[in-house]
Amino acid sequence: MFRLFPLVALAFIANTANAELIPASSDPCQLDRLQVKFGDVRYSCGKQVALDTFTNGDAKSVRVDVTLDGRFSEENKIYTLVMVDPDAPSTLPSYWVHWLVTNIAEEDFAHGYHSNTNSENEILGYKPPSPPSGKPHRYQFFTFKQPKQFGSGEIKAPNRGGFDLASFQSRYNLVGPIAGYQILTERM
Image 1 (cartoon, rainbow, N blue to C red):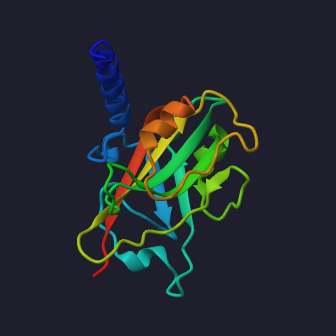
Image 2 (cartoon, rainbow, N blue to C red; image 1 turned 60 degrees about the vertical axis):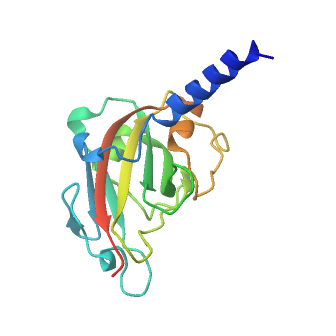
Image 3 (cartoon, rainbow, N blue to C red; image 1 turned 180 degrees about the vertical axis):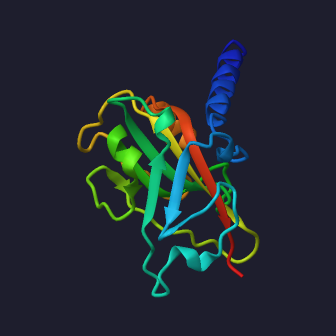
């Protein structure tokens, strides 16, 4: 019985270490390789943005364009893009995922990948920020380099709430994050 304790402790430590690959306290602006435009406006990384920026007034979301700075891209590489809210209410250290796209070709990313694509590579379609009243929420974009092109149905759509980004990264052997971006918004 006591011989199993060290193994259980090691498994717990390994699991905890994996969960910290991308802590919610991380600052994507330090990666500074993504440019994001909401509608016709590009905001600096880390800027606080009015909540109505993300809709056209009729609750329909505005188009989001995400561009990977070409200086950091590599020819013939493919990427995964994830947009998360690390401040979503949860009892676990997890994210609420707003957008999850795989198999973005380098050349597509260099010209701007946008939210109205409706591609089979959109594992979870774009949902605009919609924080509850209270304090500002961070909305973070992370880009990962993929080890290969994922086949249709290979990536299983996770739940939006309670999303474990570190486990997702580990499960699919994603490298990075190699690029990031963040804005803040709040409901008044």
